[in-house]
Length: 458
Image (cartoon, rainbow, N blue to C red; front, side, top):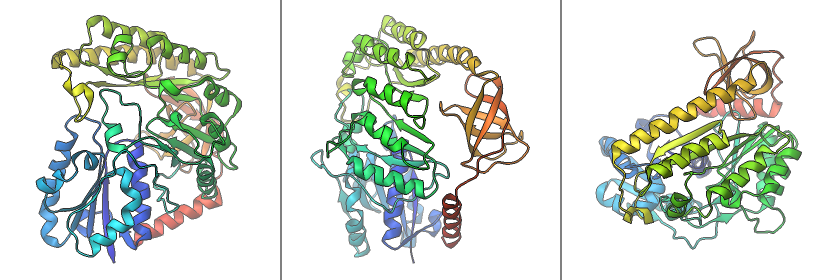
């Protein structure tokens, strides 16, 4: 039997890419194993968005090196594969296959070449491809949420970001294919869907039938779907009809992740973000005027080249103006092939560290205040994990907030339960179940039983 092991790093896009890669491999006659020692083919799905990502890849490959004498074959896929290309063969000559994400649709052919004995196989599409990686053989590894990529690639070329160079140009799937996959996911028993894209709201239906907001509504109307999420949005294409769709469609979750990256218009211009502080705040005003209580989260970079004390202060005042429920803060680090790598990285490391600490401390104060609004509220929670060491069940609200709660029974993963909030913390809520959990669909129970049998076999 042909066996494989896959290790995945990076964002939800990478995780879902691996689900599709796994499905493709299984379709080609491979069986997945949970230990690299048992695998004939080892795949490493890589991410290059963080500092020194390529160094981490080669370090991990060096750890794999000890297995090369056992007749195993190695593949590096994903963003670092596209970024480093054939240099991977030079640094790790025991690697036989290198493929960027834009070439995954060619995996069956590349696998056939690998099985035929070729030792240097590349799938490194340039930005000209218009094709997306669509497969009905996706392995659904998340027990409670189904992911659907609706748009691949990126055309924004932010000066700090490597994604346009590693994932190719923007290319959207037809709304019909997205809805067909949503219906299939619902039939498998999943009740929550998350739509994915580097800039998910840059979606452009090739058939011209639906806007992004109309696609959100259509997915929310799929029978059996209770929750629809989407990430990550770009402010440049965040339109008011998205907020209107959330207001009108109960299945669309009360959460918008809208990365701002900086509160300074000057830094936004240097980052090539294509909007100003005022433009961004206008979109925030739309969300605050919504009928529903929409939770706002964001990404922020500190220490970008040329960021002055005033620029950083603009970011802090933006936090206070928006009142985010959470942010993901990062220190700037230069990435290969990006325009910013040619800028003088003028901010000393200790200043970046200090600014990130100030940012996170201020945001923590905001969250501590924000979360108090949920005290004594009753909210519907989807169960994601069983009891922890304190006997609490963990779930997630429509606003994407973690809720730990006490319950007389252990509710099934993926079920829904009403929870009254009794305590609030800066990053989580605590409560008590006030209802019995919803029953899981027979389709999802059957899917889990099938997954369990597959795990036993592999």
